[in-house]
Length: 404
Image (cartoon, rainbow, N blue to C red; front, side, top):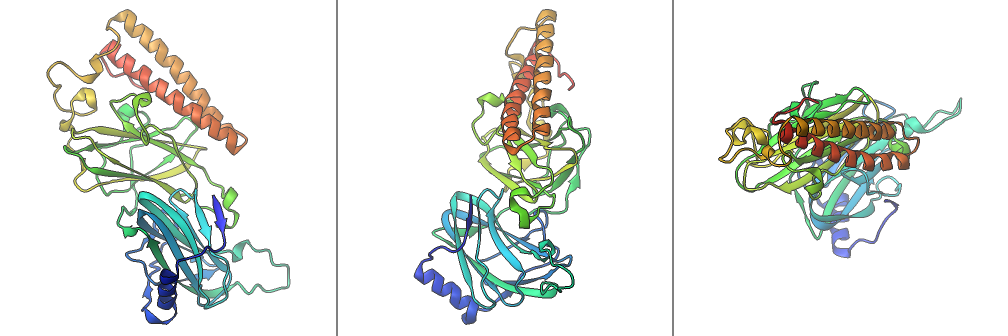
């Protein structure tokens, strides 16, 4: 939901924030370049006040800051232009589904805006951007927006909650281009490491996996779309959307509760953060990436103190690891009986499920409108679930791990 303008702010909080910005509190310089996009956004270590600058019409035409809030809370933004006028600010949640813009104030006059943060940990971004490059100026008029730098100050106050810490993306590490199925998935992932990849064709999928350690731990899975967005045209920012899911390797998708096995769409220069508590026993989780169109890029990172292991022997082979099977056999031995007939039937069902998945994916990639692509994405999620179920049936009936 897009909300523009100002909202009423509590008197004590507002007075304190305004006093800090105007005279009483020292302003800390933020804005360590580069910090223009989701993959290099600068983490804020406190409420501020902070200062920064951009240069309109130049390469430093956008600054992006990231921070975490423990909610529920009402985030109050106070933003001041101290020089220049051809730039704006936007406060948005992680996937840009909720955002607020402060009105354009005169130089030196603070402007406030508020937005609600949900319960739990949520990730937010403040973007300061120049719109000079998107303003048509007829010849021979000289635009006053050229030049700079344009300076600003801001402060953030999570009223009712508090600022929190969270993962920060680093330069991405390439993954295996052949990781196109769950059985070929790249991993196990290292906690706190950013990975990157590109969807190179309509049929391409990228798969990653990670293993949780024994004991219940908080796990955070961050996935971002590093493609550039046009904030001057927010409803049509261009680029390729990225879709992704995370799910338990050994549970059928239809048996999982959100946030597992749910498709998540990420627009250009935005991200998703999924947080969950791992089960007591080591578990393998798969991450699947696919795109709205070829050349869709993604970055991903898994975080959690002591939550992720690279020891594949924690899990038996049947559960996606390399360890021995537990007494009584592996998890893939249940289901339909084994034998040539059962195996042939299971493989036939798998091929049919693969065709339905391909048709749904084609509809997603070729849909003429956002609504039609969203409907296709829902069908694709269902088709993926059916394909995974058919794949498990082949594993059980044929007593082997099929390719594809």
